Image (cartoon, rainbow, N blue to C red; front, side):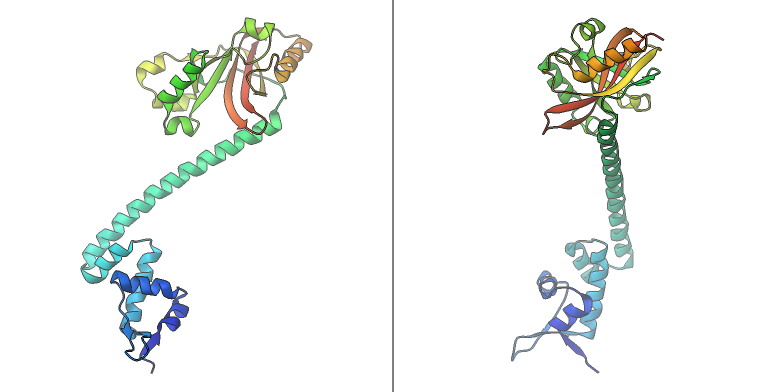
Length: 267
């Protein structure tokens, strides 16, 4: 019976590199016997069993440092505690990855919606989100970023929002002088403290023209907004309030930001 195996044989058996085996040896978690004549490494049955445990724990992403303690110092109770600790780390990672997945799913949906609904018009009831306006200058955007520069802003639970007053919309339909602020869906109001919730406004309970428009903020007239006003006119409707836009997506290649847009109209 073969009682020892070369480093190459062991590496092939466990589908690991010889460099990995040498690293384990250097780290003090795996021993190897060396032939004094040729310098080759050999592994005994006991060392192969130890390697099986090393690979078992590495597959659970335990660190080499922890594995060394498991092999050289710990009883089963200590090992159990290390595994529980690693379980908590994995659970936290699962939560983070789930959150990341949800962010990606939401962002992809918004880009898809921009692609499919750009310039399409619907008459809808009032959306249920609430909003707060800050101002019209670039400094106000910086204020927003500083205040909401946290995960809630990034994962789109708090949305960058624009308001174009009715008079300006009718005079020259564009986004160049829009007031800036935030909006938040009702289910996410808990993210704001009570005082800030009191500062929020809701859209009036009337009909709205809904569409998606892209803007570079500097155009004299926005093509989609012009078409939206024409659509309302053909439908026998009048603009009856401001435009509210919620940020959806950006195309830096085209220099455009895209917004969901609601324009208040009479019944």
